Image (cartoon, rainbow, N blue to C red; front, side, top):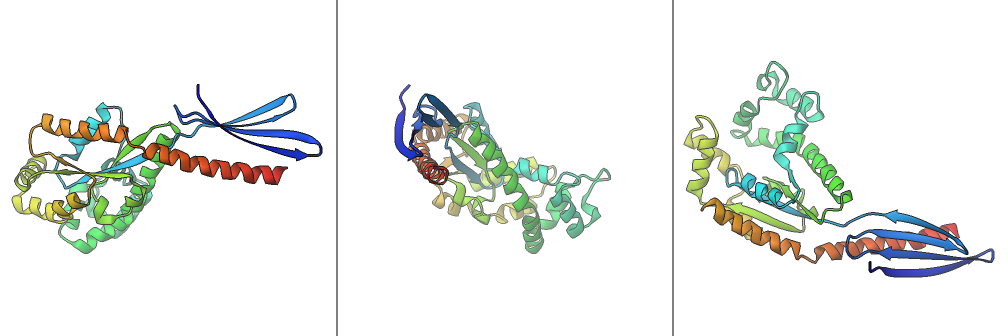
Length: 275
C-alpha cells in the first residue's frame, strides 16, 4: 500500500523523537505516529474528505425521481422535505413555535401537524410563509448538516442534498461543490402538481409554482440541468452522465489536501507544545 510520508525530529532531554504523518491515497485514511527509540505509538485519524452536491428545481419537476436514481447508484441523498417532517413532529422545537404562531386549527387531534392546512395559509400569504420558514429552516439545516457529518465519518466521497428552496434561501449554497437543477416544461409541471394534490385547482397549483423562483433563473445558476419533461429513461441517462462527471471530480482530492494541511498544522502545534 502506497503512503506519502512527512517526518520531523525533536530533541528533548537527550531523547530523539520521530513523528511521522502517513496518508493513504486510496482510502483517504491518515495516521500520525511517534517513535522513541524502541517504542512506537500510532494515532489513527480516519477522515475521508467528501464534497456535497445540491439538488433543486421547482415543485413537481421530478426531484424525487432523480434522487431515486442517485440512491440506486449507492449515493446518499439527504432530503430537506424528510427533515421538514421530522422537525415538526409533536414536541419538537419547531412544532411548538408553529403552534404558537399559527394556532391549534392546523393540528390534528393527536397533535400532528396538518401540512395541507398549513400550506393553504402560507401559499396565500407571503408574510406568513416567511414566518414559517424562519421557524423551520434553521432546524431543517441543522438536521441535514448533522446527517452530512455522519456521512463524512463513514468515508463517503460525495453526497447529494435535495433542497427545494436552495436558491430562494441561499443558506446552504456555501456548503455545496456543485448544483443540479431538475427542470421540466411548465405544462408538465402543472399537470403533475394537479395530479399530486387531490382536487387541487389549477389556480391553486399555479399559486404554489409561482411562490418559488422561476425555473429559468435556477437553470442559469446551475452547474448541471436535468430536463425531466421526457421519458424516465431519458432522465436516467442524463443523471448517470452527471454521476460519471462527479465520480471523476478532483474536488475530493483538493479537500483532502486542505484537510492534510490542517492536520499537519495541528501536528506541529502539538509537537511544539508537548516538546
